[in-house]
Length: 424
Image 1 (cartoon, helix red, strand yellow):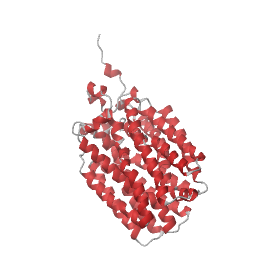
Image 2 (cartoon, helix red, strand yellow):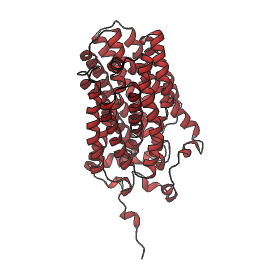
Image 3 (tube, helix red, strand yellow):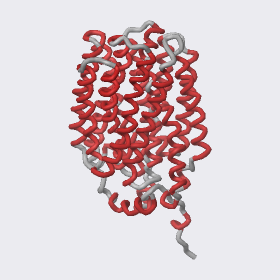
């Protein structure tokens, strides 16, 4: 006697609204500390340099080692997530970067600090792909832009938490900042294991429309370059690389610029950087809604906005009020990249979601050299010149983003609109 096996399979569509949002909240806990710890390289840069007696070129190598680790982690960990378990890998990478951060307390030399950054970067590199591949499997495509905005808001919330917490520390106590972030990440990683369902125990949103061949297909990174996808993959990697380079040339030197060029104290620097991150928190929701309403490419306008405000930040008459306002708007535009999570995943088949989202990390190939180039420019021509290059790169990235295909309304996504309205 035959029976309908599919009726026995749990689907994401069958989850209650409350359950899906609870899962999303738990998913975001590691993301807070992912942002907190990743950006310690930028925020603590002047204090690390003073503590270890480093030049600007030497201290910029911390980003290079962290990015190299993240690049390797993005490639390796995302494929493990797609092949085995996205939830389990997500929990493991969170605990991994937590332990690496707590280990900062044993760092005493420049070489040890570089190795610690590489190890922490490896695990941090797996966060984005795992998180994206999980939450887009729980919600309709017409909600994903908003969700991506919330993810970006949480990321910048973690960055703001770093700025607010870090203002109480200096060259003698910078290691404590990483240890605090590591303890929070350790708790978050355990929460993922305890409260998120195993992703092999249910079918993701829209899975009923997939064929058995698609479901049984094993993830293979080479699939990103097959069937005419290679041009999209290359442009996405370049887009991400330009984003990282522009971010590094401005954000990477912002605290150093405010301290060395403007002579501000750690408390004021922390408050000004918090203003920038508050702008990003508000912008995250705005650009997510833009991506859901007008398409994923429309959010590229945020890059152009940031490019303009880099120039204004550096050339308007300096004052704390001016830096707070221009930094706020710069941050507001910068987070247009929040839509990249669902956008990258939507460009490829479901079984490649974590791997596709990991392209975000591939862009670090550019930033590996970009950080060192930026440091060399800062040493030779000054911080203002180094930071100004970010404006040009933001405009280049805007054009590349606009050349990519739109996914909203494609591949059957329009069929999900009624589901999104009805199920929330």
